[in-house]
Image (cartoon, rainbow, N blue to C red; front, top):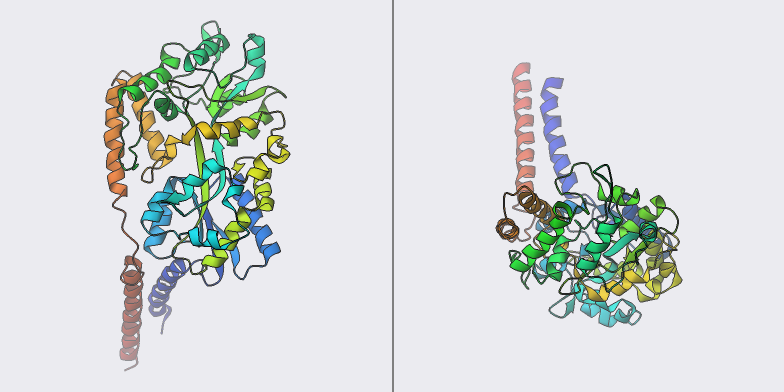
Amino acid sequence: MSWRGILPLVVGAAGTAALFLVMTAHDPAEHLVFATWGTPGEIESFQKLIDHYNATRNPAHTVILSHVDQVSYTEHLLVQAAAYSMPDVIHLDQKDIPLFAERGLLHDLTPLIEADTGFSLEAFLPGLLPGGTVSGRFYGIPHNFSTFVLYYNRDHFDAESLSYPDSTWTWEVFLEAARHLTKTDNGETIRYGCMVYTIPFVMMQQFGGTILNERMDSCVIASPEAAAALRFALDLASRYGVTWSVLSQNLNWDDMFAGGRCSMIANGRWAAAPYLRSLPEGALGVAALPHGVLRRGASVNHLITVSSQSAKVQEAWEFITFLSSEPAQKILNDHGANIPALRSVVYSDAFLHHPSTPLLDNRVFLEELQHSVVWPVVQGPYLTGHTMLTELELAMRKIQLGQASPIQALSVMQENLNRTIARQRRVPEAASFAGSVPFYLCCASLVLAGYIWFRTRRRHSHGRT
C-alpha cells in the first residue's frame, strides 16, 4: 500500500482519536477535578491550596485544577453538564447557585453537613451563608468574598483640610468633597475628585431602584429612581466636572487613582494591594460607600459546591472541608485579593493587620457586609457581568451623547437584558453522550475511516491482479 493510500486512513483515525481524547480529558476515574476562574494570582493561590492538600492529605484521587476564563465560566460548565462531564468540585459565584441547583446539577450538601460532627456552619460569617442555600437546603459552602468600599487619597484630603469620608456620608457630601479635590491648570483638569463608574447599579438601588425582580428572571431596571441615580452619576462629569466622561478614551480608572490623578474611587478588596504599592506610604484610606435614600453596599460571594454528576461525593466533601479549614483559609488570606469566609481568620491580626495592607482599616470591609446586597453586576443566574456592564456602558453613552434620556436608555437596556435572559433560560438540559453531536461525529469518523481503508485495500487488490 502506497503512502497516498495510507494517508487518508491515518487522518481519519487521528480525527477519531482526537475526538475521543477531548471527550475523555480529565478522566474522573483518575482525578478529583476542581473548577474555578480568576486572575493569574488567584489561580496561583488555588494551586498552592491544591498542592498542599495533595501533599498533606494523600487523597485517594489527586485533585487537579480546571481553569476557565470568568466571562465564559458559567456557560462552559453548562456545556459540560450537557455532556455529563462536569468537574467534581466547582467554585461558583452566589448568583449561579439557584440556576445550577434548580437544574439538578449540584449535590445537596445538607446531609453531609449534618453528618460531619467536625464541621460547623457557625464558623463562617453569617452574612455569607444564605448565598449557598436554595429552599432551605445547602448547595454551597462559603469560601471567599469582597465588599465594595470607597478608597481615598489621604494626602489630597489633608492638603484641602477636608475631613476623611465615613459611613455618614451622603452623595451630596461626597459631591462637595469631590469639587474641592478636583484641580485644573489653564483650563485642563489635572486631578479629578472621584470615579464611581464601578457602582452605578449600586447607586440605583440606593436611590430606591431595582435591577431584577425577586426571582431574578426579569429585568425591571427602567424606573424613575434608577434613572435619577444614573443621571446623578453622569452629572458628576457633564455638569460638575469632578470625574471624566464615559466617552473619554484611554483613561484607566485604577491607573488614574494609583497615579494620584483621582482622589476617590469605589472598588473591591482586590484593588487594595495594587493601590498601596503605587501610592505614598500612609496615603491610602478606605471608608463605607456614600448612601442615598437607602444605605446599600455591594458584595461578591464565592462558594464551593459539589457536582451532582460526581461519583466521588465523599472525597469532594473532604476537599471542601479542607478549603474551609483554618489552615487553608490562612493560605487564601496570604494572597490578599479576596477576604476569607472564616470568622476566626478575618477577625484575627492575619486579616485586620494584613501584611499587604497594614495601614488600612481592614475592618471596614467586614462592617460593610451587613449593609450589602449582591453586587448587581453579578446579580441573577442568567446574566454575566460582561453583559450587564456592556449594556450599562451603552446606555450611559446614549445619554451623554444626547441620544436618549436616562429613562429611555434604561428602557432599551431592560428590553435587551430580558431578551438575553430568555435566551439563557433555553439552555438545553443535560443529555447523555450517546446520541449527542460528538457521539455522531465519532461514529461518522469511524465509518469514514473504515470506508477509506476498504477502498484502499480494494484498489490495492485490483492493482495486483
